Length: 305
Image 1 (cartoon, rainbow, N blue to C red):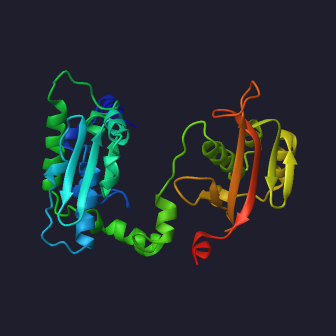
Image 2: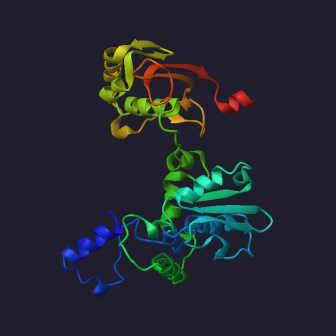
Image 3: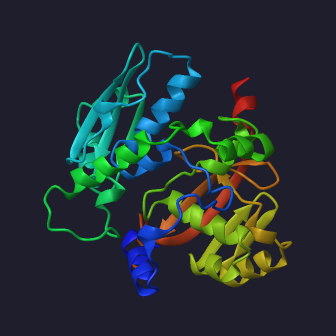
């Protein structure tokens, strides 16, 4: 649901929005908010919210609450400095991110953290926002967001009571292994063996035999430590025999942001090899799966020791 669609719904239902009671209590856990949440809508807002909490955790009592160095709606890359620690970068638009990461000097590697927002100026410049011919509309929207932030009693994410409860009752603690599993995601280059593996194992975890079979080339082979299946019919039959996976709870997960190593729902660590084949019989990206094989490996911690 975009901002524009929400405004249209309110207008269509003839809701006197301006006269609504501001004291209304909303459902938990989305009822309580902080100023840090509001500024997510502007370029640099996610970074600033993160810095507010990070500097608190690090005991940096003199750190500013407002980080002007990462604010601004203009396209490009903004660089802010965290005293005695290093720099952070904020890319406003995908084009700006591409410029940053394609820099031959790889200067991006020196930053402690990088924020990338696809839309110029952040979400306030997104496709779902009301259209405007005002050339300064992004500046005005950002100004409004920061004004709302300034009016909050709580302006740091970790001060949110619902967030605290979430960690106490489910996520254990910030940076815990469980919270990392639940809150982080990895990405795969399109058409790569990693993406093909991710899509295939996602279908397996979802017990979607039809999708898994469709990803295989004719005569494709799925080699597993327990055996192997040849062709889409055998792969479909094997997946159909698997025990149900209620609510898609048990999943294969990549163990790092690169490579083809995954941990299975049962906790085994596997290193996969994926071979793709194109419709003309050549190998390469954007092809169907010719073969998937896996070998058991030691967990990273054990391998290190």
